[in-house]
Length: 512
Image (cartoon, rainbow, N blue to C red):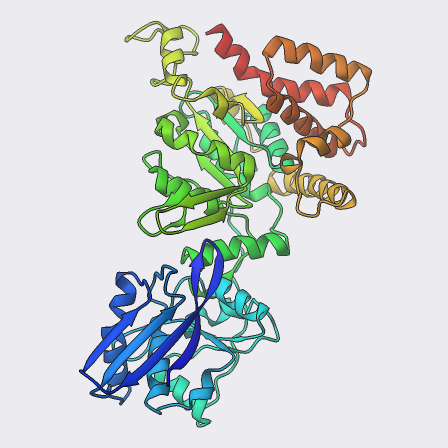
C-alpha cells in the first residue's frame, strides 16, 4: 500500500498539485525517486536518508519507491525533500499515515534533520487555502505562508523532530504570524536635486499615471538621481497588487524572512544583463527583472549600452503586461506590468549637444545618430515621456535646497492615482489602476477632447508622424496631467504639455 503526501510544482506563479506516493516493498535494497524530477529532486534521496538518520530513524533494508505524480509534469527544486521524508516515515510507521491528510507539504532538509527555507511558499499556501488544505513548511517561511489566510492551518517546524512531536501530541507548534518589512525611512528625496525643474515635473507626471519615461542628457546631469527618487513619490501597493508582487518574489526566492512590504519594486539591472536575466528563463525558467518589477519600476541606465535584442524583447511585455517563457517540456507565464524608466547620453562621449563641443571621432550629428540607432523605433514609441535633462550649472548648485520635496509631490501623485482608480472602477475595470494601463477604447471615452484640442492633436499627429499607439499614449498622458490638476475634462494646455513630452526627442531625431 502506498502512502500519499500532497505537495506542489510551480508553473510560473501557479502552484500545481503533486501527489508524492511512497511504497516500501520486499526486494533489492534501493531508493528510487521517479516522476520527471530534476537533479535537485534526484539528490533528495541522500538528504532524506541523512536527515532521517540524524532524527533517530533508519531506512528499512527494503525496496523504496517514490513516485511524483503526475509523472509527465516536470518537477524542479529541493522542496520535495520534506514530503518525501514524511511519506517514508508514514510508510514505516514512525508517524500515523493519516496525520498528513489535509496538508500541503514543502521544505528542504539539511543533513541534521533541520528544515531549510524554500522558494514559492506563498503561492503554495494560496493554492492550498483555495483547496481547503493546510500547509507544512520550514519555520523561516511560516510568516510568509500565514499571509494566505488568517483561518488556514499552518505548521512551521524547525526540524523533523519538532514536526513528529507535534503530530504525536508531545509538542504544540504555534501558528506563525504574518510578517511585515519595516518601511525604509531614508529613501532618497527630490529635495536633494537642485535645478532640473522640468525633469522633476516629468517625473511627477510619470509617477501619477504609471507612464514610461526616457531621459536624455549629458553625464552628471542628474538622470540617475531623478530615477532613484521615483520610489519616494509612488503610492504604496494596493492589497491586490501586494499579493501579485509577493507571489512573484516568493517563486524567485526573494522574500527574506517571510516579510512582505507594500513598497513598489524598483529594479535597476546592469546594462550587461542577458535576455534571460531581463525577461526570464534560463535552464530552469525563473522570473526575470521585468517580472520582479511587476507593479513597480524597471530602471535601465545607459539604455543604448544594452544589447539591442535584449531591449527589443521588452516590446511585447510592455503591451501585454505579461511574459511567456516557453521551453521544450513546459511553458511558464509571469506577470510583467511594469513602468519603464530609462536614461541615456545623447552620444557615446555624452557631450555632442554641448555648445562648442566638437567630437574628435566624427561630426557631432553622425555621432548622435549612430548612438541612438542602437534603439529601435518601436521601442522608443513605447515611451510616453521623452525629455532632455540639461547639464546643471554651478549657479543652480550653490542655491539652497528646494522647498518642495518628495512628500509634497507624493501627495499630489496619490490624489491623481485615487481619481484614476475610482474612474476605472466605475467603468467596470477594477484591474486598471493607472491611465497608462487603460485600454485604447476606454481612454478615448475618458479623454475626450474639445474642438481646439482635436485640431491640435490632428496637427501634431501629422507633424510628428504619431503612430496609433503614440496617439493613444498622448491621450493617456494628457488625461494624467488633467488628473494632477484635478480637472474633469482635458484642456488644450494639458494636451499641449503632453505633446511636448512626446515630440521633443522625435523632432531632434528627425533633424539629425
